[in-house]
Length: 269
DNA sequence: CCCGTTACGGTTGAC
DNA sequence: ACGTCAACCGTAACG
Image (cartoon, rainbow, N blue to C red; front, side, top):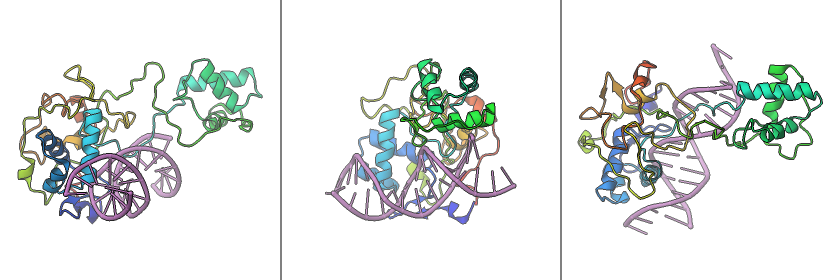
């Protein structure tokens, strides 16, 4: 976008792009160094990444097994699925005077939704207004009124907690002014840093990234690995899918063709 | 000195 | 087409 895409320089002399994740190669290097026993403070200095960032990336890796950043932007998955709308419609038809909060309770009671994915009262009202045409109904007497900070992790029946594919977007792992020698390619067989990581189950195992499982950003894989035709940019060697149990396994190769137009932040002006 | 946490200014993408 | 919103980002600073 703007010239700021070229990056800023932090106190350690490292280059970063404000608001954007660090390149994958550096994230990977952070984890690798940590596994070699390098202290976080030394990693920070060596890679010229703030210690807070090192701490965050390592903590996340320990927790989720993934080095990748979370999905930026987007919205949570819709809770007003056709099924939910259908039920709301039925409730409204059966009892035209029903309150939105009553519908909400009913959705819970009937098992249509659970507490995590039940629409908010305002959402229900909007559904009634927009999709059913029932006009606004009172939300008033609701003690459970909530429209904000509604956590909707999609735990309803068969919905997986984690995305099948790593959904995150990330710039390609190339970064000017960072010595590529420091990002010397490794054979990535990273083990968990701690004991907290759940075991990997299959070669295609989904790394449990709790953060944003809903945003299946279609350009994520290209972005994540910086793949253009299969060669990761900024990496000395291609990162193969079979690399280790924890770094490359989140991606489905089919993703590569989903959205050819990626935004390589570190390559564009 | 080390490191976990968080305010801040920023980007992103679905709605 | 565009604005809003809520997610995420890394840095810097604090404790």
